[in-house]
Length: 386
Ligand SMILES: Cc1ncc(COP(=O)(O)O)c(C=O)c1O
Image (cartoon, rainbow, N blue to C red; front, side):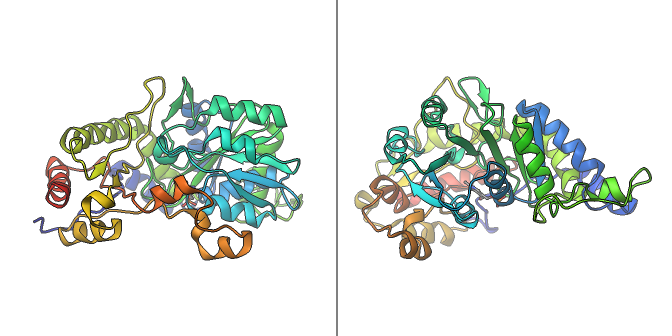
């Protein structure tokens, strides 16, 4: 057994990034300033987005994107039950009603046919989540959005570097569209905590930019720097969601490594497939559609609990005994107490998400994994499932 615990994810931050953080701290300019702007520019170039607005988390980004498109009380927003709470929490915080459409059991992404069925005259937006980094069927979702004049906010927390039919996730998809990325430490790149909102809509970009900093017409850089002017106006009652330069310093460097990071993720996934593909007690995620690029934020097999005669939680416990970390992405949203109590959702409402929610695990997957780490992870699974 390994002597050291293998986490399911671990960030890989270079010495250059650390030096650039130190440079920010020494310079005296720690908060939002030139490095945040530099990160926005390079990020926008990478995904091909006309506007990229850095924020302090994807949660903040989702909240601001909903506000920027004027979504609020009386509106309904359709999303998936297989997501992190932030996707649904932010819908609740703008005063809109979250509406769930079940997942496709193969891709684990929202099923467009069920999205169509969930549309009502009050529906204003769809938030597709590219689960694990596998792009949703954006052609189908775009067609529904066009038919009903809906906003699309892609929850791209898992999908940095993913493409759908040649369109990089985050690239333009019309005026009523934004994509939101996360830079939490487990994600494809990190800034410690952080997020980015990408859109081609000038008005939405302007609103996100103002709302992320109290609704002020000018950020600190435009007020306190040598060429700044201290006066400002409050255009909306905004929030405090700006990204610091010390975070952006890490982000700019991480972005340079993204393609190599994602290539390493793919390599590890291929290895897992070769070593674990024959097991009857573990179902591996399907091979992605060759027309798309999967960003492999997480690798999420299903534990075949009946065949293995072991619950998923017992499986996770056994992995932990072997010093191998796993994670649970996700417990289906509708089964959490707040949501079931407030929206009347109950077990049986979204059977595909429930089936997956009871069986899914995330195995260790991060670019800095060594050959020994991968071998240890594989061996632990084989010992439990073999
Ligand atoms: C699908 C999804 N959406 C949103 C978020 C929120 O991201 P953040 O932690 O950057 O706020 C996460 C984070 O794990 C996520 O996985």
